[in-house]
Image (cartoon, rainbow, N blue to C red; front, side, top):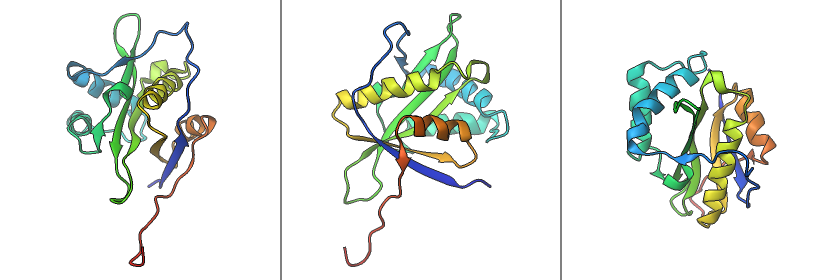
Amino acid sequence: MASLISLAALIEPQILDPFVTAPRVIHAPDLPELTDLYLHAYADGTFNPDAETAAAGINAIFDGARGALIPQASLLTRDTDGRITAAIITTERTFRSDRPKTPFIAQLFTHPEYRRQHLAETLLSHAMQALHDSGHKTLAVTVSSSNAAAIALYLARDFRRFTPAVTSDND
């Protein structure tokens, strides 16, 4: 089993391509289609959930299991036929009770047929701009150490390894 890597980045204003159609905010009616996209995105064996597990996972995120949803930074893209091609779901959570909440990428996934088209990078840029506009300073994510494509994306966007501080009895 692969280990997990936590990464974090400072949120700065983004340069958004004016010729790329902006992603739109995810709405509740999108959840069944998001579940289907999630199934396809992970069907390559990296996680490979069944339909029930995928639906439960997506619904749990929207129900707050991984922190409070940040709607303006939870976005999707669609193809010309209207099918969802990629999505980012961003939540806000606490790593330590004595620290402020931090925006966290709960999920970022792309349909296999649409990979290498910069959709994940576009979603990440728009989410980071929305977070910046909301006054957030950092963004964190946890990825599998075996997910080289995701790690490369985040490192290219100046994410750095992050280890949440552990409190001691002396703090």
